[in-house]
Picture (cartoon, rainbow, N blue to C red):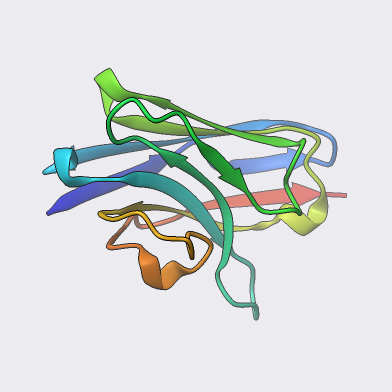
Length: 127
C-alpha cells in the first residue's frame, strides 16, 4: 500500500501562484509515477500532470489546459511530488488530488490507471 498526503492548497487571486505538495509513504518502491488530478464542482475529475518517478526516468506530462503555467517536480529522497501553479485563473478552482500509479500506461490521463489517491486539497482562485 502507498499512502499519499497533499498540502498547500488555499485561496489566491487570479494571476497568483500556489505550490502543492504530495508526500508518499509505504511501499513507494512499487510506484511508477505520481501525478495530479483535479475536480471542480459538477465536473468530472480531470488529469493535470504526471511525473515518472521510477528508476532514473525523468519524464513529465501535462494537460493542455495547464501547459506553460504548471510545473510538476519530484524529490525522490523525500518521496514527494510538487505541483507549482503559476498564472492561476478562476477556471483552475477545484479540489486537487494526488495520485500514484504502479504501472506505466499510455492512458496516463485516465484516473482508472492510478492505484492510490490522496484526500484532496482545495484550490480556489478568485477573479
